[in-house]
Amino acid sequence: MAIIVLIITIAIFVSQKVAMPVAALIGGLLMVIIGALTPANFCSYFGNNVCLLLAGVAVVSAAMFETGLSAKIGAAIIKVKVLTSTEKAFLLGIMVVSGVMSIFVANVPVVALFMPIIATVAASSQGRITKKHLYYPMVCTVSVCGAGSLVGSATNLLGSAALEETVGFGMEMFAMLPVVLILMAVTVLYFFLFGYQLQQKVFDFPEAKDDNENAGEEQEYRPLQAWIAGLTFVGIMIMFIRGVWNFGAVACLGAVICVLAGCISWKKAVQKIDWNTIITIAGALALAGGFSNSGAGDVVANAVVNMFGGESASPVLIMCVAIVLTSAVGCFMSHNAMVAVLVPIFCTVATKLGSDPLAFAVAVTVAINICHATPVSTTIYMMPLSAGYRFNDFVKVGLPILIISDIVMCIIMPVLYHL
Image (cartoon, rainbow, N blue to C red; front, side, top):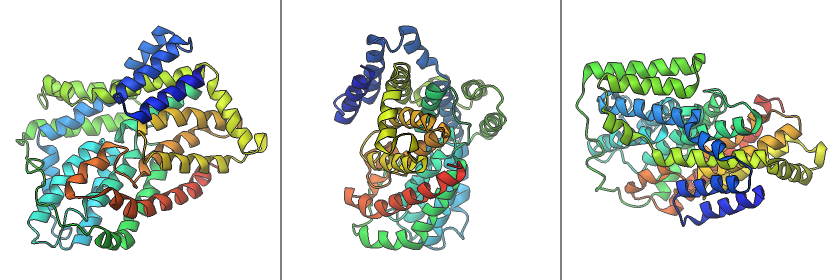
């Protein structure tokens, strides 16, 4: 029955007839109805460590914007003349800086910060620098690097929670960073050596002149609160790394400090929390929990193992299948939905083969962040559409780096995890 519930839920996700949080709730509630979860277990997912982490980090990140700290960082970048001397130099600088930043800050705010920075430089460059040649590479880099830590994307948190629900332990804060740093280097080199020239041929539309004028509007800079927000952010990152408390408690501590210090009002703090994502994650975790508790995960895992040779199946081959499947289907389907479905399946497969389930959870969670070939699967790829990009532009420029990233992951993941 749990497998039928999973199929029904996937169909609801794919149909997009109902909002994603509602679809996730339907899946979780159906697990309760068939007896795979108790009502108490279902409710417990809404107070999950992952949901609290997402809410707390959202408030701290928003506080950095509200105090004007993020705008100051952006202004400092603009003043570095060597970065803005040529479009290609600015491309390299923006990709590296935004990529590194997105490891520590949720990827949507990073894109929201750097788009107006790019627009400002482009407007004052007398045509030397254009938004259309910079937005897309920046977004691709931010997407990849957002997988570098659990706070870089809500999908990462869901991947860790799905792993914990399946095998009893989750990911550490920077578990995916070694893979991500390699992919970041590959992505930056692709655009710097090849993709930039390809963009010049493919992006043959005129430079958009009607970009959102208010996107770069600065918040009033409040030095004391900006320092507090910045130090709080650094402090919670140190606590994450050192394992002080669980992630959710640390993030909530940071949020409370920012509110009490006046970095952000309570009303704005509540508004900045992405409740749709939190509800989606809670519902998806309930779905994954019911799927695992019912034994359906074992059934599907056995089918996958038997498909590739039974007990003699190659973990390397199955990992490559996981990577390619995730990155391909992830171009068209919700990333949260994909991770909620695939992480439990492939982690169970890993357990049956005597491999490390963490390796497969990392593979799926990172692979979902390299879906560069379409703009429809996640928010950050939709954000730069104001530059005039067309669907086929994503395919022509993004598909090569997606394939390259797949190949790189299939080579380095077995090495890193000794498969």
